[in-house]
Amino acid sequence: MKFTLKIWRQQGPNEKGGLATYEADEIGPDMSFLEMLDGVNQRLILAGEEPVAFEHDCREGICGSCSLVIDGVPHGPDRGITTCQLYMRRFSDGVTITIEPWRARAFPVIKDLVVDRSALDRVMRAGGYISVNTGGAVDGNAQLIGKEQAETAMDAASCIGCGACVAACKNASAMLFVAAKVSHLASLPQGKPERARRVTAMIEAMDDEGFGSCGNLYECEAVCPKSISVRFIATLNREYLRAGIVESGVPADPETPHAESD
Amino acid sequence: MMNRGGYFQSALGGRMVASLTGLGLVGFVIFHMLGNLQIFEGGDALNGYASFLREMPILLWAARLGLLAVAVFHIATTVRLALRNRRARPVAYVVHQYRSASLASRTMALSGGLLLFFIVFHLLHLTAGLVDPSIPNRLDAQGHLDVYGKVIHAFQNPLYVAVYFAGQLVLGLHLSHAVSGSLQTLGLEHAALNRLFKTAGPAVAVLVVLGNLSIILAVFLGLIHT
Image (cartoon, helix red, strand yellow):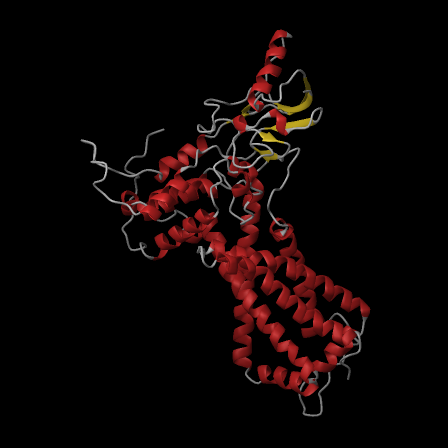
C-alpha cells in the first residue's frame, strides 16, 4: 500500500510548527499505524533527515503512550482502540492521512507529535489516590465488594490516561479523565473516606492546569480507546455537588497529605 | 477543602450555575409560551391574562427583576466559561472531525448570543413598543391594554414574522442541547431514566418552538384576526 502523509513537524516547544508531506511506500496492510511510521522514519534516517518524533511504548493498547490525531480524530478512525491498535488495512490505498499531536494548552508540544501530558499526572497527584497505612498486605477477600460496584469501579478504572478525551473535546476539557478516576475510587469502600476532598482537589487541579469545561458534547466518549462512558461525568458532577453540600462543614485541610514537593 | 476561589468559581461549579439558571429560564420560556397560547381563546382571554399579570405590580416587577437576575447570572457565567474554553486550546487542529457532537451542542455560544439579541429585540418590540411606532397601544372594550391587537398587528407584517421565525429556530437549537446537557451537569443520570433525560431537551425545544410558531403563523395566515 501507498499513502501520502501530512505530519505536524515542530522543532521544539516554542518553535513554530507546520504540516510536512511525506510519501509512505511499500506499506503492508497488516502493519500497525506505528509500524508504518517506523518505516517512514527509517527512510528519513537513511536519507539523513530528522525522524518524526512520536510517543509509543507497549504497542498493545494498555500503556496510553501513543497519542496521534489521525485525520482529525484522536486514535484514528476506529472506535475503542489506541493508535497502536490501528492497522493500515483500515485505510484505502493511496489516500492522504493527516497526523497531528493532541492539542490543548495543558498539553504543550515537546517535539513534532509528542506532547507533555504531565498535567494529567498533577491532577492525579491532587487526589487520585487512597491513603492507607503501610504494612502487610490485606487479605484478598477481607472486604467484600458487590458485583455491580466492582464492575462499575473496573469500568472506570480501565482509563489508561492517554488524554484522547482532552484532544477530542471542543473545550480541551479533562472531565472524562477526572470522572473516570473519581468514579473509580468513589465506588469502592477504600475510596470513600477521602471522596469529598478528592473531588474538590482534582477539579481544582484540573482548572489550574488550564483545561476547559465540559459542554456535554460527548466527543470524549466517542474517541476513548477504553470506551469509558460519559455517565461517569454525571457521577463526577454528583460527587462534586455532594462535596459542596454534604461535606461543606468539614474543616479545611491546607496541605494534601501526600503532596510531593516540586 | 474548598476551592480557593469558592465552590462556584471552578469550571464545574460555573457549569452548575449555568445549568441551574438555564433551567430556570427554560421554565420561564415554557410558562411564557403557555400564557401566550391563550390568544387562541380570543382577545378577551389574552388581554384579561395580561391585565391579570399587571394587576399585581409588586409581584410582576419582582418576577421581572428575578428573571433579569437569573439571565444576567446565566450570561455572565457562560461568557466566563466560553472565554476559558477558548484559552484551553490556543492552537487549533488543521483537520478536525466531530464524531458524535450534535450541531446544537457545538454552537451553544453562538445560539446563546443570537438568542440574547432576539430577546432584546422582542422586549423593545412588543413590551416597550419602541421598534415599530405604528404598533397600536390602546385599551380594549373592557379597559384592558389591547395586547391581542398588538400581536395581530405585529405578525401581519412579514418582516416581523421572519425575525420571530428565525428567533424561534435559534431558541429551539439552544434548548435542544441545553436541557439534556443541564441534567447531565447536575448529575442526573440513571440507567432507567437516561432515555427520558436525553429526549427531554429536544422534546421541550419542539414543544416551545411549535407553540410559539403556531401563534405567529395563525396570525400571519389570517386564522386569528381582530
